[in-house]
Length: 114
Image 1 (cartoon, rainbow, N blue to C red):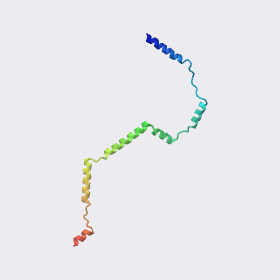
Image 2 (cartoon, one colour):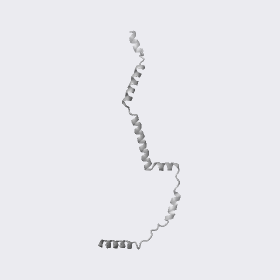
Image 3 (cartoon, rainbow, N blue to C red):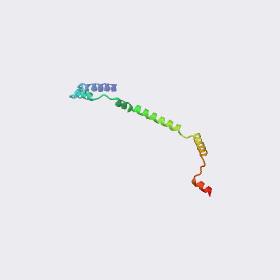
Image 4 (cartoon, helix red, strand yellow):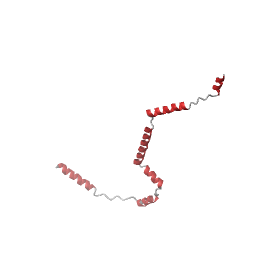
């Protein structure tokens, strides 16, 4: 019971301290300066609006995550697999066999004549 009486006295003291409080008022020429600042703000053009949308953290992080995901997928798709390496080796061997013309150059012809 004693604690309740102490709490009520504390509440009454707190409310009593608010008796002399006055309403806060703005300083001199506040509204004039506010109106001048509002009039000075120019409307945004298309680029400024676009940049303000792109600069939002949620959109910027989402775009970055999308770019990284696409790069990761493209990297994974271009990794050389064993089958691709074997196919490339076979193509190279075929090209070496097919395009080996056996053309003798000037020096080889000279050796054959002697």
